[in-house]
Length: 119
Image 1: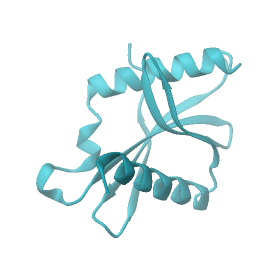
Image 2 (image 1 turned 180 degrees about the vertical axis):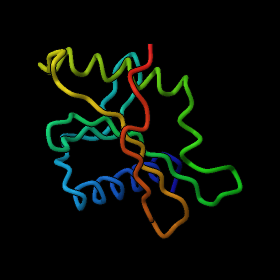
Image 3 (image 1 turned 135 degrees about the horizontal axis):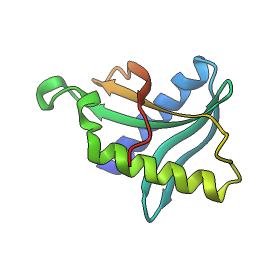
Image 4 (image 1 turned 120 degrees about the vertical axis):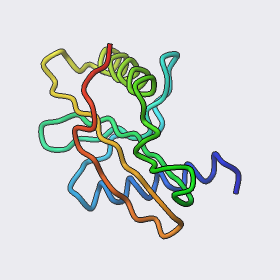
């Protein structure tokens, strides 16, 4: 598998995990000029933007460490654009979660409220 196919497979695995946790999936891979959001979902009253990070092993670090400030800013701008273009007002409660997949077994670790909107 190439990198894109691998990424897609683990995004789908993370999506299945989210559904098991009670999330309602809205979509995968929203793209615009600002960036990309891997998964958009609903969790209760929250509109949730989920970044999925996969690492084959721990040699290159924990997947959660890959969501640095620059990545958070890109995700935040993309989320704002998504809300603007999909009819979600400023009163819609939004949240940013990170789903980390480490190893080929597909175990997902979920961090809710991983970060706030970044300017």
